[in-house]
Image (cartoon, rainbow, N blue to C red; front, side):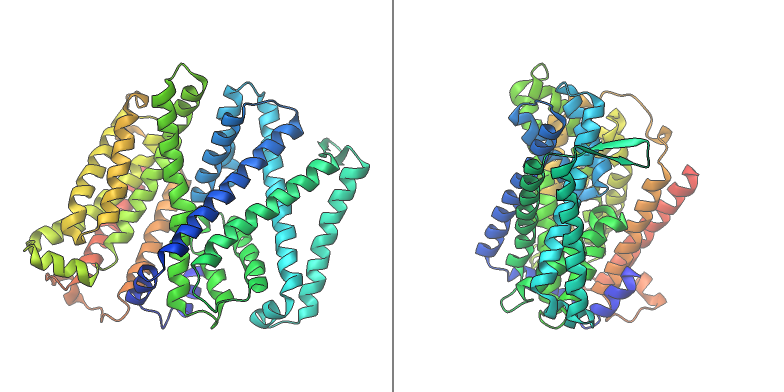
Length: 486
């Protein structure tokens, strides 16, 4: 359904126009988006501070900041926040002396705080921009105002309970301790500020004369909620579809999609890379005997696994999209042989699949997974240049390789790669990645007349055949691996 919606929304949009919109984004806007991202993640650290105060646990400020930042960088990227971020909090706060039952309450508090903050944020947007949202949704403004009032009524009811009662009984067998009213109000303000900062990242990246701010706030809340409910990693595709629908004709589709791509890179990928580097830096600086060093040892495999997964997806997506005209000219100028271009394109995509498959082994600190991830990263980084002068791709892969090398001593578990068994969720996620990449291939080359002759077309400008062969190889290898796992 998401693919069909995106196909309809982007029917008149061309891949080259989207790239042009990304490149045309002014540097001050990108810098402002990075600053807003930092402010948003700083506000997110206050979630954990409030949660620890709620459960009565005392943890050092540096541990709280590191744990919260890493947890949100991971959960924002791969989704399933209470689970992925919860694992991080359980490991680090337990190591800091917080009993597991209290850590579980911290996780519940954070999830509830985010939900209540989203309720307030969305209601404010609906009340403020009811008219604009009603026009976009083809409904009446009073309907949205009533909905917003109901949302605020629910929120007010919760705050009233915090004032009047210390706990509530759920189902007659579970007593939920309520936070003090002062803490609840403070956390609500923190949530509103954090959501405003995260929304401001995308707002900054949009071109002038875009969606009215009130309508943008309402649709941003809807898009975030839809992405969370979908359980798709990071809400990829779902969030973008809602925001494209919200933009309507107010923003050129190519500019909107370019802003959404930049938003993904700045708000999701950049914090993941920074969090991984920060953990490894702490490990090197303090050593494993120091508390922060022990925390880094516990967590860096999780973040390296996420970064390995992202790098693998990047390689496959890169394999189904054309290189730029500038890259083509450089390949011609450097007299790069066509067989090398074809081979690097094909091998790079297969290496991407390999990185996705070994990410789970990185998570479990397998020695063989480290060797495979390091080797695949090095090979793909070298081939990124003849593949299409993909400098950013090479930078990401080399960064991953450096982080893997620095963390070598953590991967000490001996096991065969073929011995690991992937859970159905991993296989389903892999299938979803391949389907999404097939859609990207269609979008990038939708003007190409597909026929059986494409399979045997080998030339510099034959980018569609090259991408088709690469994706087919990835799909067949993934299918074979999936069948072998059953």
